[in-house]
Length: 79
Image (cartoon, rainbow, N blue to C red; front, side, top):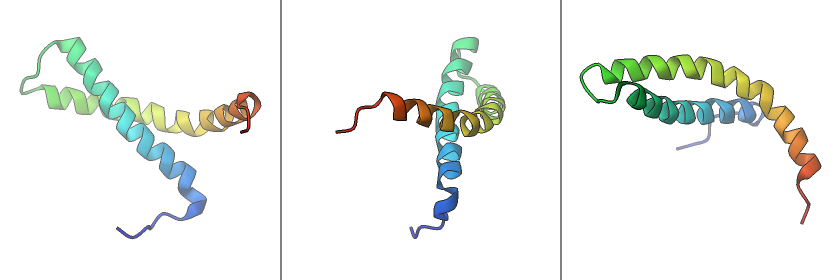
């Protein structure tokens, strides 16, 4: 696959993909733990939980990531 995302939006693309994968996994586990079964309605419940959690996670990571980078610059030793 040829690269197609401009470098200037790499951080936003990273946040988008990271939150897509993480919320997909976590919401699936949480949905299963909540209903304790995988049946015909599971996928619908999971999708709803995933979209709701992603809608919060994506903008949150865009706001929080710069703060985390600043903190890490202060606490990580070079070398």
